[in-house]
Length: 318
Image (cartoon, rainbow, N blue to C red; front, side, top):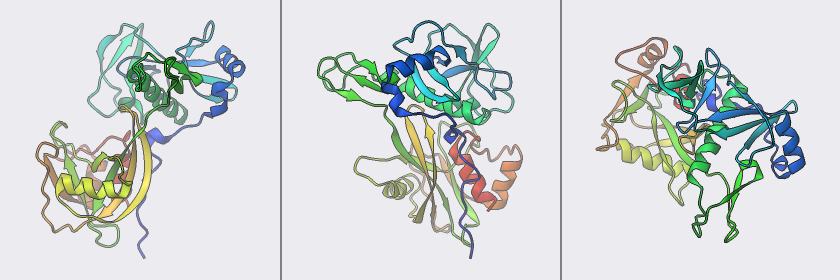
């Protein structure tokens, strides 16, 4: 019996080694101690942070002075507290991405340091650095958009070391939002894991860039129902045998990608949704393997920062 394919490896943004230790967030004495010996990650308005050469580690700042009210605790490891603070530092734009990075995004620099975003460096960073940067971007992004109470419009106060806000007027509490989205690898089921996979491209993507299908979960909808609905809406294909593969935080700005596999009839014509999907096609395992191994001009797959890459690679090598 064929063993169902799985993710090729843990998604690159799902790696994390620090202890979040939620009770510490409401312990002022412990927070003060963690700040005294802490390391600070700074994130600019474009979600970039300084990284060391090769982009495998973050360029932390030492914590200095008293614990500032806008510092957010990311976690603790070996008695060291890791924090994040937003910054408005003036940067020189247009620094190229590292050679081994993926994407069209460019960085910036200041005083000889290079600043890069999570999409560019997520797959290059160590486990600890990737987990810290992913959480840092999520928290900074949430606070940038949650400055006022959703109930009465009053400016809110930060609580719990950045993990909550409190409205001084009506008392409403809010916590960081995470919006679920599904992402599904659809194959034709031939031989168990399929001989062809359904790939598609959005109009805004670079030429020849293809990936698996994805979409946001609607209110009152299960994850599996969302998979079936999104694929039907985007390419006009009905799927069956929906099964879970894994998940990955995707803080752009506040999603978590929930990965699935599903089966569809590879002989049924696909019908890309106008304005949403430019093209969709069935691709053989041999072609996908070649695209993973070489820089094919005709089929450019997602970069390793994305869970989509681990899904496609896991299927292709099954």
